Amino acid sequence: MFPMTVCDLSVKVRQKHIIGPINLTINEGGITVLMGPNGAGKTTLLKALHGIIRLANGQVTFATPAKTAQEQQSFVFQSPIMLRRSVLENLAYPLMINGQDKQSAMERARTWATKIGLSAHMDRPAPFLSGGEKQKIALARALITSPKLLFLDEPSASLDGAATVEIEALLSEAQSTGTTIIMSTHNIGQARRMASSVLFMKDGQIDAHSAANAFFDTPPTQDAQKFIAGDIVI
Image 1: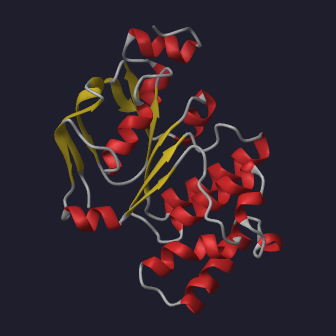
Image 2: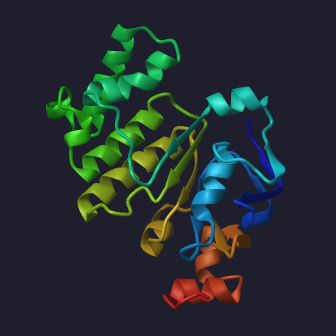
Image 3: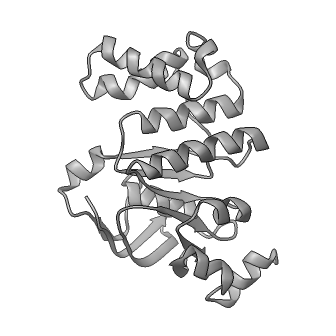
């Protein structure tokens, strides 16, 4: 499905310009980390790339037909959305809506529940679990179909250190087994640990796009330098 090509993309909300124009190419493999100050447009760009927000202009295209590309993607929101069902049923849901029979879907869901450390909670209602547990369920539910492309919006924004380590381990494993990841984060330490490339946004525009090592060693723009140094970017 790669490369993903973004041409003159822009988004407006109630006639207010939010992001764009953005031109961008994402190739297969690795973890692209999206960074920038609050209000830069990171979440909007993620949604636009995934096709869940209307574009005012431009397009996002893939090497495969649009329907095929959409079927090979997953998205995890910053605040995980749980179905009012058990942990197992949450995990099995995407497999079943893709046509997998219930027995095999539940077997795979059990494997993933164990993998994310929730084997003791398989039958518990997912909405009543902790924030970290919900985030792990949301991520496992996104990965259980083995997507080619995964979008994540601040996947560990409100998690403690232990939960963050678990989330990052799941992401690293997914990337190593063929899932291309595009994720936003405010955590510069996490970006240094996870990123293979960095997209830095400011005022709805791509201010910098480079390999992670180059971005952190020699920030390519003045605003990127300020952001990495912990200064306020206006």
